[in-house]
Length: 337
Ligand SMILES: [Zn+2]
Ligand SMILES: [Zn+2]
Ligand SMILES: [Zn+2]
Image 1 (tube, rainbow, N blue to C red):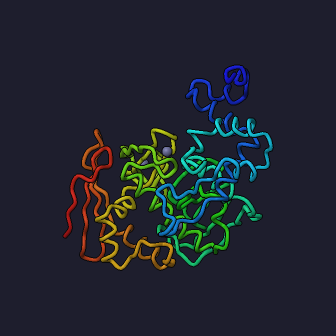
Image 2: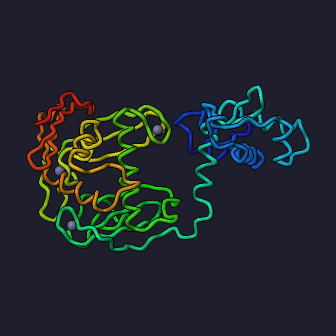
Image 3: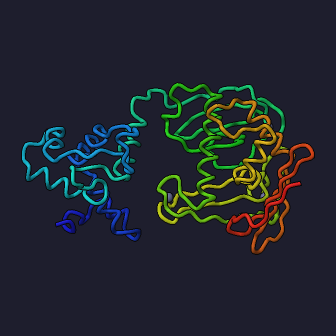
């Protein structure tokens, strides 16, 4: 039955050659009753308290109650839809049905983008100078991405025409990030999100799917940054960058080894001693100013190109922290002076 249904379906056409299971999972979701079941279970989930704490964080809903919530009369038909979702998006426990993490994420993704009318923020100047050239900088949100832009130099990254010019940093963020936030807040959110997603990646965990992330060091062996910004050869100002890629969902991320060093537990402590609290939720642009100064005073030394290994020295006045990374971004040596 499933085979006949998939025959010639657009999903199976696209998923061909990837993983056959993907077609089946998309088709499981391609039905309004099943989406209603996921939404009903999410609506019924009680917030975690000490009294109701359950490691899944989600409450179970009995069959008849769930059927009533979704508004389906025929129990046989309803049972069929539940079975289609079971084991992947929901599970049946002793007290009823509950969402599995994947089902919860699907609902959370949709709910987080609902009700937001404003989906673009035109480039807006903020009170923060470019860490490279000192010119004023802008924050903008467009097509699902948040960018920090310089008004004069070429920024940190050279990318295609689909992106605005002069990018200092950019990140993909759901448009829910725009709710009740000023442009300054947006930049702090970007740093908060980057720090935590890269901190997870450094521990081998993908922020998107909790799958295993592999790290590698990318070193540009012909690195010549121009006075206005990125190197013509690699397109970055960073000579050495950490690259992470998830073996499950293909999510990948890249960042310079200097900021990555500040996420290492020793780096977080070093920043703390330098009076830079890496908590962007309660921080201000002053936190970023001090962080930029620390990054500008820090240096990278390439220990080897093949296999790549680097040493990063973070500097704050006379204090130094040196972290050496091997090719898979494991910190093999940490020293302070
Ligand atoms: Zn600049
Ligand atoms: Zn380069
Ligand atoms: Zn992943």
